[in-house]
Amino acid sequence: MIYYALKSALLLTLLYGGFSALLSRETFHRFNRVMLLGIVVLSLVLPAVHITISNNPLHLRTHPQPLRTHPQPLRTHPPTPQDSPPAPPCEGGE
Image (tube, rainbow, N blue to C red; front, side, top):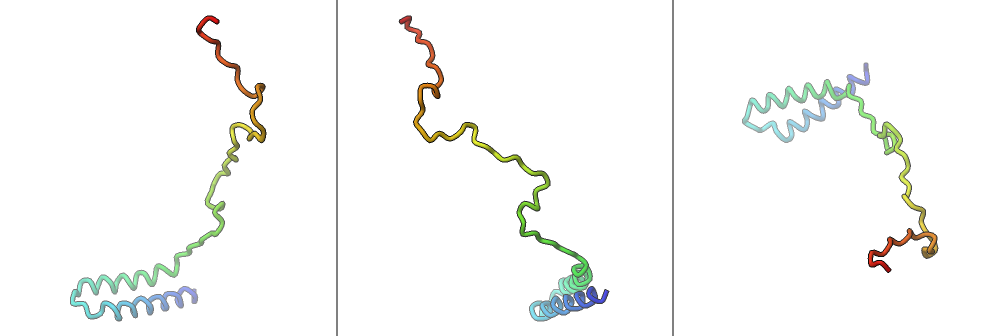
């Protein structure tokens, strides 16, 4: 609980410091009010959020995928007559 309070206080300090440095001179009072309320809400909510990031790309897959294989084995020699399919019959009658 003490860590949550420390994180919340640190976040509130950082967010309010940024607001006062950048936006405190704005004359839009409604905008300032919304920003200050948003800072308070964020400083209370963000310390309770836990985000874990995995460096392992396989962690994201739910089901293993089968390995893709080449449909025919790779040949290291030129094709021989036994490897080629039979020629279609000629239509000329010869």
